[in-house]
Length: 125
Image 1 (tube, one colour):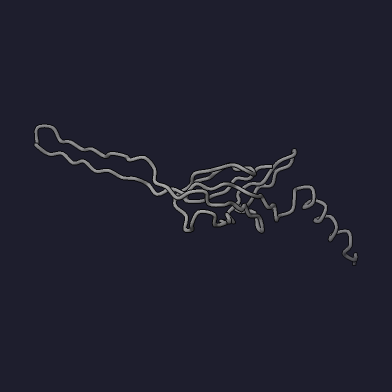
Image 2 (tube, helix red, strand yellow; image 1 turned 135 degrees about the horizontal axis):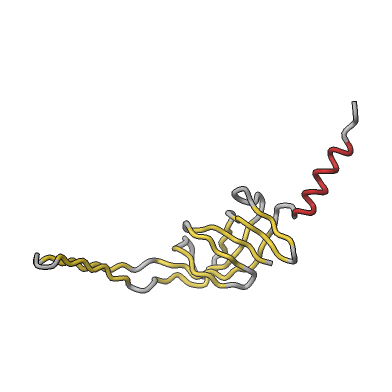
C-alpha cells in the first residue's frame, strides 16, 4: 500500500517503513507526527483520489532526526564594477520514518456499494 501526502509545500509518495526527508517539523527525536493532508491512497489494484484531500485518512510517522541540509552558496558578481556578494544558506530538515498508513476514507468499491444502498432503500412515491 502507498499514499501520497503533502507537507512543506511538496508531495511525497510513501509506504510503510519508508524514510523521507521533509522541511523542518516541530518535535524531538522519537516523537510521533501525523500527516492529515493525504492526496491519494492506493494499493492492491485499487486507489482512492482526494478532492483535494481524502477525509479521515492520515499517515503516521516517527521523527528519526532533526538535521540541516548541505550549504548552498549564492554568489553574485558584476563584472568591472568591483562588486560581488557571497551568501550561504542551510535548510533545516527533519528525517521521518513512516510507521502506518490509515485509509480512513472508503475504497472506490465500497463507495459505489454505499451509494446504491440509499437509493434502493428509499420508498418510491
